[in-house]
Image 1 (cartoon, rainbow, N blue to C red):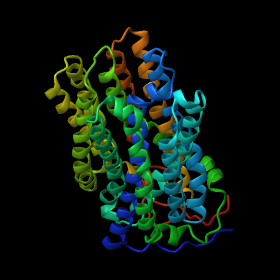
Image 2 (image 1 turned 180 degrees about the vertical axis):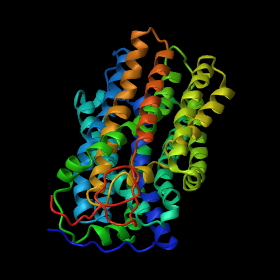
Image 3 (image 1 turned 60 degrees about the horizontal axis):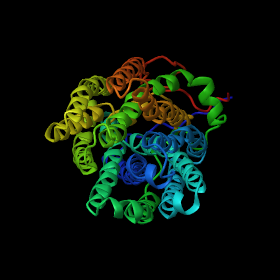
Amino acid sequence: MSTTASPVQENTHRRALKGGMAALVGTSIEWYDFYIYATAAAIIFPKVFFPADLDPALATLASFGTYAVAFFMRPLGGIIFGHIGDRIGRKPALTITLVLMGIATTLVGLLPGYAQIGIWGPILLILFRMLQGLAVGGEWGGASLMAVESAPSKWKTFYGGFTQVGNPLGALMATGAFWALSMLGEDALLSWGWRIPFLFSIVLILVGFWVRYRVEETPVFEAKVEGQEQSTPLLFALKNNWSPILLGFCIIAMSSGGYVIATTFVQSYADSPEIGLDPTIILGALTIASLVEMLVTLPLAALGDKIGAKWVMYGGIIGSFLVIMPLVLSIQAKNVAMIWLFVILIRVTLSGAWAPLSTLMAQMFRPQSRYTSMSLSYGLGAAVWGGLSPAIASLLLVVTDGNFWSVVAFFGLLTVVAWIGVRFAPQHSDTAPVTGSFNARTDTTAIGTKH
């Protein structure tokens, strides 16, 4: 038995802007929380939450291990909040993820170090990081749908870009905070300064909660999902969407794995004893790079509406691989000016692989189980590519006696995988006639059919 879904009304720019801003504010806060942990994992946690006599390389590897835990919680977060978002609505799911992230981040800021509570320090750190992973796992997919499903058909990539701006804006606030605090000196930063960005999260969460409370539900959910007879979102996703889920998993190789290597791991490499750069150099470069990335994200997203999101993705994926090589050389040469140049440039190319991602992945799935499918695909990709990439890169350095070109080769593998995902990604329209096709066409399916 099937029911007929209501047609999706042509969305207005006013409604799209409200949805886009709600996505932007929420994702900025959640990525801020996520990146202050990433920054601290690279330069603070190895010295605070692990024994002082532990080899620095092993301490860094262990710290990145706690960082990776969140990535493996993302698929579970995508399933939990995807179910809520596909059954109850995008808005309530996003509100819960925001609050959960804020609580977890604040608790990290209050956590005593290894010197005070011993092994319980890293254990609790892992627990709070798991909560962060759950929140982010449900956040990105829902925020993307809030923006994309509220946008006019010819502006979807542009408004989807609002969600993507949240990443560099959150990174800008995170690295900017640590850059400013690093001016206090290493002793102050390690003893109490690093806690300030974590505790400040509670203020941002209150702002984000107020913004999201006022936003409307998406038109696509109201017209094609709400009140319709449907199966369990996860079961529908696994039965009908397994192919685009796998392709989305591949796409994330660059925007998650490549991004982590070009930012967090490069930061750790520059700060390592082999290179020995002053942390303020790379933190300053990353802060300015985040600002530049934030400024170019929406123009690149708008370009996706003109020439196609896939073409922008191709340019970003290939361009990032071409830039990672001179970035490594500039770090090894300790050339500060060139480090700043290529850190900024790689964030621009990575933005090409990031700016259209919300819309590209949202349109890979039909409305029913879209939140679950999209979040599961993104979460699995982030878990494998983003979660394991720092550890794999660290291991490659150990195995090759510090030869960073092995990491560049791994970056090349991520480039190939991401290109394949984009090449074969299907795209569907929310306003096209109903059809049962699962090929790469601009169509959609009846969602009232029982499965």
